Image (cartoon, rainbow, N blue to C red; front, side, top):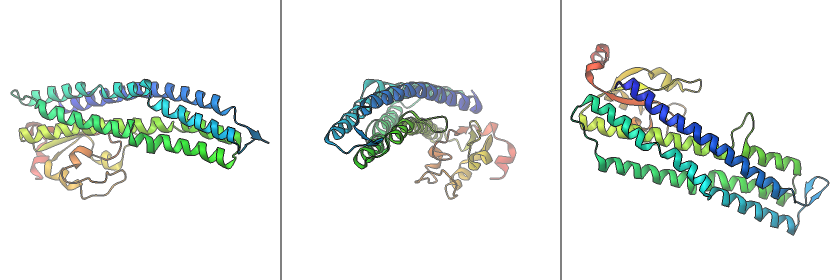
Amino acid sequence: MTPQELAVLIETLILDADARYAKTLQRFQNILYDELALILKDLELTNGYVKQSANNRRILTQASNAIDEAYTSPTYSLAVSNYVAIVPKIDAANIAYFTSLESGFAPKKVYLKSIQKELITTVNQYVMQDGLQSQVIQPLNQILNQNINAGGSYSGFIEQVQTYVRGNAEVQPVALKYTRTFVKDTLFTYSRTYQQAVSADLGLTYYYYSGSLMDTSRPFCVERFDQYFSKKEIEAWAALEWKGKKQGTTESSIFHFAGGWNCGHQIIPVSELIVPKEVIARQ
């Protein structure tokens, strides 16, 4: 297997899972919005504005409970679990690649399990627990509170909730954008982390910067795309500044973080035998 083939395979696995997740979560968001709209239609109004009343406070609590129940439901957790379920396929792709480089290569099962455990813990924290609460649920509850407590325009209120939960032609639903970006980023980082660990074991010191170029690709990635680099050259990138760079990017973590947030590019370890002579010569 070539490094190019590995890059395509891992990217395909993650992006296909990402597309399936997006469809599932969009349906989930539509159902949540319909439920909230049904609850909020009973709000008491005065000339088109939400009335400040005990009954409306009760409706606010009912809507808030519906949000909590939705994000703790099996439907939501299963969607996330199905996304992360591609991890064994990512492992298999990496193992097949490194086996093609080193016939005697054997994956370290204990290490694989440890980084898998770390991935699950991270996803649970940011997509199922604290992160979801602070990035998705609390801001939505603030929209409810602000409009009901301050007596906002009912039509504007409903439009605000709809845009937040369901999105529109220009805006992704907040929950979908946040969770989708986070899980995808975590999976690419997971693959790069495993590749770097194996690279150290096999003594590989050259890498291939690969992945797909898109309209949104950063100049940092565009400049390095489809090129070979030495370990020392990559380590030196950590001292640079660019838009999207992750905080904590060091000479070591650059191999895990690559271009930063939402970067799908891969820094794949390669045999020196396939590295262009000019790359070796510039060392």
